[in-house]
Amino acid sequence: MGSFVGAHLFGYVTIIFYAMCCKEKKNELLKDLPKYIEEQRKYITEKQEKEQVVNDKLNAKILTEQCGMKFFLKYYKLLIRLPIRDIEVTENYSPEEKNERLDAGKSIITQGFSKYAAQHILDNYSDLLNDDEKNIANDILAEQ
Image (cartoon, rainbow, N blue to C red):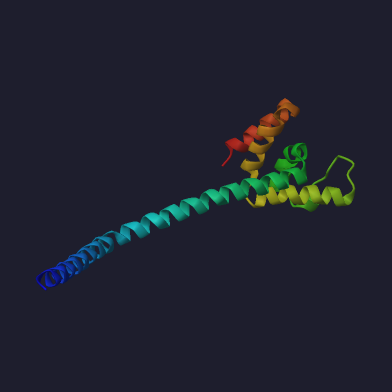
């Protein structure tokens, strides 16, 4: 009978000790909770910003390919300053293709993808560009 009471007493002491440890751990977590939440917010914000940059680069790539690399560089200054209707394209494109290229080029600029587009062009097509086109791409990267 004595060992039975001792075993139960040991169990009760263990439960009390466990409850005290849980209470202490809860207090520690509550103390660190604001710091933890701030770290998680910062991490999520940085992750979202990185994802946004990746999406912007992808959109710039798609629009640049739709516009045409050399076309974008050739008409860059006009696309910045003039409405699409006022840009005279010297190449012999169909009206649909001309509008598609101009719309894509204007979208690159209005969405703020000019640097990404210029970097994409230089990274992937610099061997196909002449010096003037490379200079225009480098000037775009130097802007802003």
